[in-house]
Image: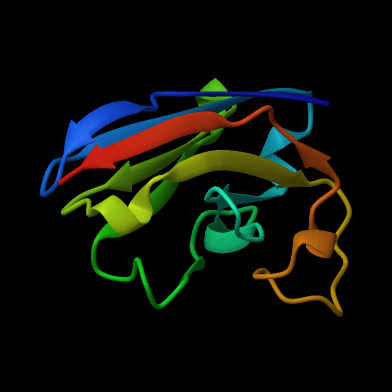
Length: 126
């Protein structure tokens, strides 16, 4: 399984970005997918997740109502639409794929995901 994240960049506060994560793998439509981020000097934190069918989504409180996760199974891609960005959103954003169910684990925990992309930098200037 290979994951390629893209769409990061430099944006002013209040602006928007859309991240994409393209997955190489035949069973993408059966995977749950997530986005995490890591700011300098901080631990990796959960941002958003979506289940295999796309009918359930999960968000960190800090991004709820500003970010939206979606998936396009025909394109093996998961998206993260980020609106009303603030400097506190500056981080490297990682997409992750959960190939195995890990049913006892929460979508917010990194251990629920089996594969990780390389990350894309998001920088929000004030």
